[in-house]
Length: 87
Image (cartoon, rainbow, N blue to C red; front, side, top):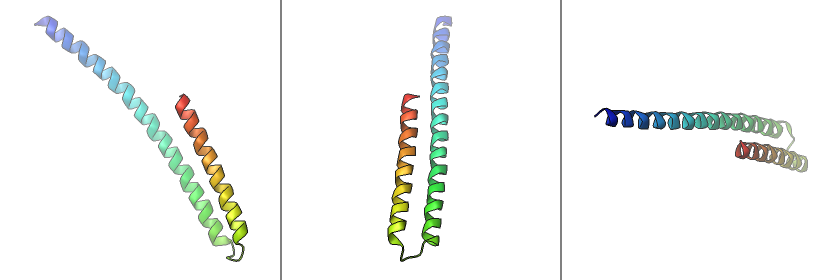
C-alpha cells in the first residue's frame, strides 16, 4: 500500500511540475499577445488620425502613408514572431 501511495505522489509531483512549466509558457504568450494588441491599437489610431487630417483630394499621399505604416507593422510583427520562435 505504501509503495502505491509513494508512486502516486511522484506521478502527481511530475504532473504539477509540468503544469507549472505550461502555465509559465501561457503567461509569456499572453504578455506577447498583449504587446501585439497595444502595437495594433497604436497603428490603428495613427491611421485613423491620418485619414481624418488628410484632405480627400490628396489620395496618393494617403496611400503612400498607409503603405508605409503597413510595412512597418509587418516588420515589427515579423521581428516579434522571429524573437518568439527562438525563445
